Length: 343
Image (cartoon, rainbow, N blue to C red; front, side):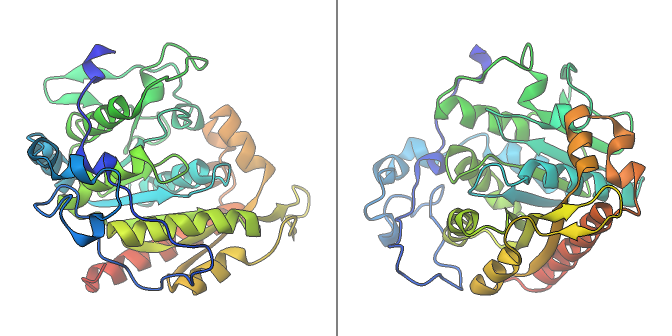
């Protein structure tokens, strides 16, 4: 584990000032956090930030490995962050389904999926490749390729742990260094898309990956929520985080939007209905659709059996059609974003 030790990056220690709960939501991006630039720690935006002094130091502002990250990431096509301030909303399920759908649409195009949930990696199980180890090559770490998706490349800390029960007990600097290795030392090759599955919150992992991707200009972020008001309250913070950090919000997708009966495929709204759409309208960002609960979807994730996944074993099911509709809406949002240079 000693090889993962490293010094913290400036972006990992730059926090934005919180806003009072009563203040109306921002519908337009605010000035981006200047960490990693000459204005780091000196900009008026840095006033009150606990990381301002560190960001202002020469050591914090200069990262000699950033150029290596830029080279890898600029060959990685559209880089998509999957975010949610709330845990347990199905974010990893949606990130995995997004990557799988993109890979299945064109077998000649390569798709990457980087699991940044270091303390709770789920992609090895979700794709049925748990127990696989990462192989080092002269070109860097070789991503794991699942048998049922030969053009999909996976990277996760789950491939580095001794067993599924092994916890990752690391502080922020070690997480920062490993994320940097995922980006600069992994032999991703040329990709059409690179999807990042992130943990809940707006902390070290998010600040680190946003900072490292800044020069490569990521396509933006997909915000995942569930319909309940309690989840929406937390997810709002993720949207404000993106606005503060200058990350374009590609849209909001609502997970667990009703329950699909395994017998008749009728959808029953167990939770509240339409929360994701209201959130998107509130912040003026695209609404990418809703994905219902489906027992088959859950079984696929618990077992990692390829044929159990609705996209493979039941492409005509309600949940599979909802996933494909979400991906269609996301790709349209990316195309629109590329035509509009504003963040």
